[in-house]
Length: 316
Image: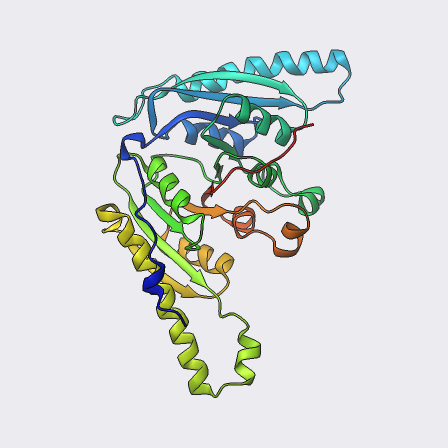
């Protein structure tokens, strides 16, 4: 096996002056989960002059008179939501954001992505919609579609917010999404104090095939070698962050990343999981799935999903 030290990453370029967000898009359907999402968005750190767009999508296909009433009701409720969440005092270390209500007609995930593009949003915030329907199980929820097809990072809110994020778990694959994942975690924490843990889960490639050709002692040595390689890669990555990552708790686990991430999040009682996604679509997504989407689907904590590069999705 190659010496992992030869794969040392380049120093991460993290601009701490940009801790916080400039343009936020918050989607709401007025359910409890969406109300929590708006409340969480108001508690995030913002840059000076930041803007927050609070979006409600009226379903298409309604008769004109029904849609007119739905539109009018949505605008009235949105005004109340914005006033309640963004009209109060801001955090001591954040200037707050100017919130604007927006109503659109169409498919929710399409309009969320469209509005995020139009406003150049650097974060989309959505809430959990409660029990999943059979349709969602096959086609994916609105949040999962926005994660898969949109370009900005997505924060999925699962709990009622009461304070800024204080315990954060950054789950890294030590691949091309790691830089974006750490950068995003630092932005959401802002200049506040937070207990940050960094986590990497690795599997044993082709373990079943390898095991048939090795003795028990050789298999044990193979597993230890993989563990030490993962530890070395994680250590090198953290060193590339300079002093910023020096005080973070770091852990490496062997197992399915989906299971291990949730297990570690529960063990540490974190209030936010941050991880990356490659945004696979089509056949590759159907065959390989997505760790990020699985975690979003099953986590009881808030989940923040970073993307290493934008995806191409032609809006209808």
